[in-house]
Length: 183
Image 1 (cartoon, rainbow, N blue to C red):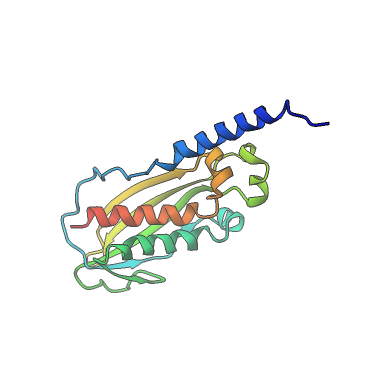
Image 2: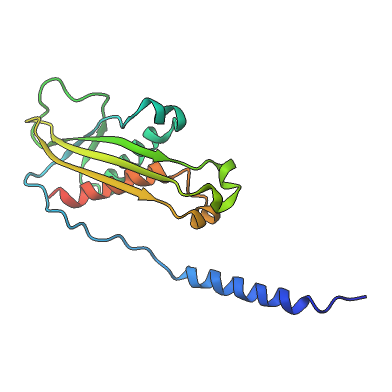
């Protein structure tokens, strides 16, 4: 005995699902232009300090600081305008002119694990909040301090699985910002 009554339902579901996916296919995200003023001084060298993170967050998300730093370096190197170096501490004596010290501090973070994401959107969103400090390496003067935040969509994360890359993406966003504001 054939069950022909369910066939049109499956076809309708397939059609709706296909239309849903097709509506997302042409969507292209374009970043908003940076509205902050450019820095007064030009910098050719970037010294990237370790990303600060509280002990509690470091215990819960041990890879977040390293991922954020890696994303920052990628964001800075992509422009091919700067000589980028990772350093463990700011130079004891002032660095040469044209050097910018970049320090990030993760102030709040939540990264949904793969296991929790298995429960779908009930696991909620992942997010990273951080503070960026740009310091002139020669004078030691703080020239820009800004807070950044990002949050993914729980529904999108369920399908895209982008929870694990959110810290690295946040670092890249900051790298792109620095590239935009340094003349």
